[in-house]
Length: 191
Image (tube, rainbow, N blue to C red):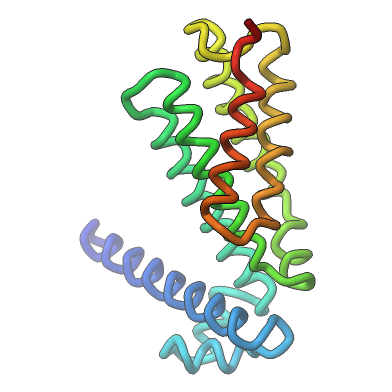
C-alpha cells in the first residue's frame, strides 16, 4: 500500500480511538463506571458496536487506555517544565507545583474508578519515571547550591512526591500553592 494510504488509515484509527476514549471518560464522569455500556460508548462516539469491539473488549479497558494517555500527557507536560530555561530551583518549583495541581485534579476519581485506573503497571512505571527526573532536578539544585545536600536526592524525591500527594485533599489553588511552598522550604539548604 502507498505510504500516504497507510498514514491516512493510521490517522483515522487514531481519531476513532481518541473519540472513544474521550466519550467513555465523559460518560463515566457523568454516570459512573457501572452506568456506562459499550453500546452507549459506540453510539455517543458515532461508530458501530462491532467497530468499537475491534478497538477495546470492554469499558474497563477503554478507561485504562484513557488513563495511560492522561499519565503520558502529564509526564510530557512535567518534562517540558523540567527542560525549560531557568535555574534548577525555578524548574524544580515549576515541576512540583504542576505535579501538585495534577494530584488535586486526580482527587476527582471516585473509589471504584480510582481502583481500576491505578492498578495497572503503567502507574508504577510513571511514578518511577517521575521520581527519576525529580531526582535529576534535585541533583542539579544541590550542585547549584539551591537544594540541601545533607539528604540524598532519592530520599528528597520521595519526600516531594509523598508530600505533594496531599494536594489531592485540597480544594483551593491557594492551599495547593501553600503546600508546594512548604515542600520547597524543606528542600532549601540548611544555614
